[in-house]
Each structure stands twice: as structure tokens, then as C-alpha cells.
Image 1: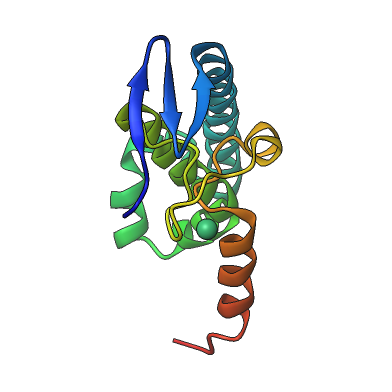
Image 2 (image 1 turned 45 degrees about the vertical axis):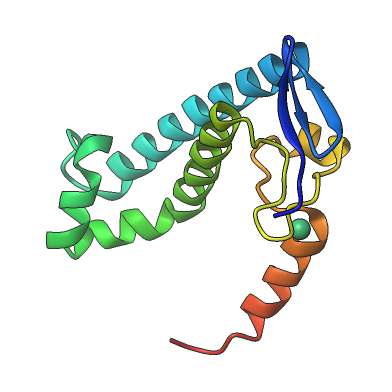
Length: 140
Ligand SMILES: [Zn+2]
């Protein structure tokens, strides 16, 4: 991958663009807040949809694998789950100093896009492409 990456003082230089520590801290905060919110949403949806109100997030995978009823709850919550996964990926990339780069083409993701969707791991071009391809991908 022909991208230049270096750790600058108090920030990360990604593909020639410096993300200052302030911006990173702010976006990270946004991500964590969003994640907390989504976890709460998930929890409430799952307790609404399932009769066992004591279902914990950490048990979700187990529940999903052996209970059909909870599949409904899981599919209801799939949007939140997907977003949480994306947020986690973004946080990992932040740690690795790769945050703000498109996972597909390696180009820097637009700052506006990062502000609006801090968990973006794809640039707008690749994201659009992926969505278009996904729509025409046919059934599994
Ligand atoms: Zn891209």
C-alpha cells in the first residue's frame, strides 16, 4: 500500500493529512458515546423482544445460536449491532494509527465525512460502490 503514515507529535499523519490530537480525541469521544447509546438501545430492544428480560449483551452470541425466538430480537437489533462493529473497527484503527483511511482503496476519508460518520472505515466512493454491489449481489 503506497500510503505514508507516521506518528507526529500529538497527532497522526495519515496519507499526508494530519489528524490533530484534538480531532482524534473528539471523534473518539463521539464514537464511545455513540457506542454506549447503541448498547443501551440494543439492550432495551432485546429485553422488549424477548421474554427473558435478564438477557445480557455478553450472552447474546450464545442466546442467538441456540434460541430461535431471540433471532427476532437479534434481527431487530442488527442495525445497532452492525454500527457497533463499525465503531469498534474505527476505534481499533485509531489505536493502530490508521484511522481516517479507507479500508478498500487506502485513500484518506474526507474530514466532513469523518465528522458526520466518525466510524467510517470506507471512503464515500468505496462505500457507495459496496452498497451498489451489495444490492446486486443476489441471494446467498
Ligand atoms: Zn475507498
